[in-house]
Image (cartoon, rainbow over all chains, first blue to last red; front, side, top):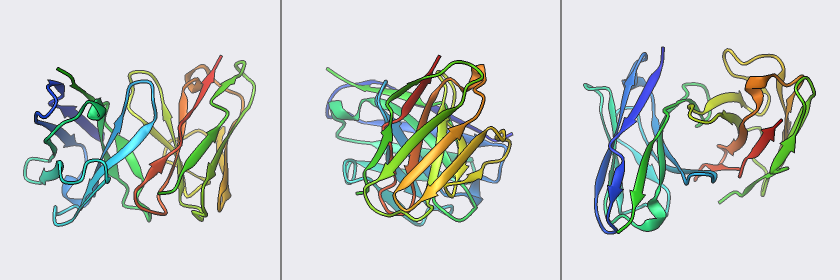
Length: 120
Length: 106
């Protein structure tokens, strides 16, 4: 069974940093591109970042470029999102998601999310 | 950035009835569209990809159609577990973008 479990969320002050983790199991992690998507509670979904299966290529939304860094450890089956210079508008639930191996960059499995709150 | 617009924002339906949800893209995306279901406290679930292909394990009462800029998700005979929020997502262009969601309520 495919499982994605996020952790690392919490309360952080504006300008602070946080590292989110996503533990993957039930599939060959190193074969899949992975994504981070966020959602302000009660609002819609916003794509944040994507990383290639071997970690050699990354893509970011303009709103987080230069502040967030996505990485992965394929030996540990774990995806990371390093978040720096956090702002109030980064407050959201952060989901990791597995990109399909079918044609197209859509995600076929999602985690349940971890809440990040940026506030003083 | 491609803007995805879903309508209606809320749809009130009785169990056993059907529901039709719409999604419009600000420019043509071919058939590069996915639909997801979000239930409270649960992970997002992929329902449809390539505009009309049901994902693995998705019941036949879920159907997708459309291409270009206009798309539809149809749910026939709603079951209790179908009352949720539904999102469309385009994957034709970067960044990936989602619609604002349609809440299907009893």
